[in-house]
Length: 528
Image (tube, rainbow, N blue to C red; front, side, top):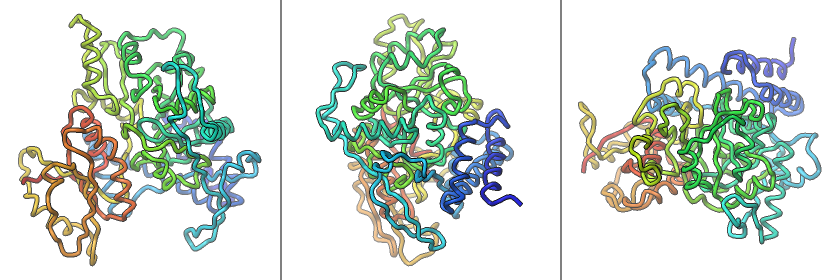
């Protein structure tokens, strides 16, 4: 009879075959990474538990998608995420998996990265000793660049030391969390399959969800592209105006350079040049592109501070660079300008607004016949094939969901056959749909000066209101910066339900509402 470690490993291989696109085409880096973990599991029940959780996670994601395709082929992403959130309410949340980086193969240098060992109590009351993650301070103001793509100048020795430790960790093929202007990223060497596979292990990320590659210079970008690729004029304009910055562009993938684990076997690769000094300096020190999704467990809200990362992934990676709170607070805008019609397709709204892109194109392209349209996915057009096999993160799986279920509160005109509730009756009745208990905490994410934000909350027996202000109505950039922190803060306070107020979906509001709709399991309309 096979050992439980071998059985678990073989189960993972079978699930990888079923989940891969095309089927049965297993990425060798992922299988190699799981094999190494299975070998380590002989010495640690914790790692074996993580492998089992990974197996459950991949199977549940695949089976859930099969059910959606079978019973409702026309379902949109909002409905899909509503199903996920309903599952969480009844205790069917996806397990979190990760790789313990405590192995005999670690070098003396890598061991020095960790704090002293700490003792924790795990499931089944087993006492386990593990090493905790080190958070290293980086002062962004001590890093400067003579030009948008020049090498960094670092005046703080402490910051240089922190960056050097992180760079060494990356070159040792281990992941590192670091700040960007958008959210904190979980980075690994983009051109090394083994290194990139550890991102999936730490996050519990499905293998068919592609990664964004980060570069520090145009030379690094050009080194990733096929020699035959001709840069579209629209890309030249976008790069000149918005790079470095919160804009990701789709490019043809050079299969001789980009590992398929990065692109999820898609023909394109998503690339951006971050503007955060710490991110750019880290990439430049490593002198290699870094693949980095958000530094959180898959499906959870993206982190905008190092503390958010530590709470979620502490113990699962060795280094977190603390460069302060992120300035934008939402992920980058993802643009596809490769289609034959020449139009700009916004696959994911983000830190660069649609209005910013439209204004640039109108300013630089005077001939109306040559002016490309800017089309937002799911607002201006649909692409079911793209949703089934996405070319960029954030299009297929659930995202941005805290532990507590989220209800989106709409104050605009409701759809036909929907009768809005008065705000008072809604707030008074909100406890009725929850599990019976003596008292509950309910969180509210509201705009500072909106009608809901200035409302005196009613006294409801057994309800403790926890309000978090998102910023003023007329400055959505503040709301963008505070959204994920609000969700994570209310989760930290132990609320059992989160109510979040809608914002106007223009400018940054489009990206905000994109995230809020994905996080919400229910939508309610109210009147004042």
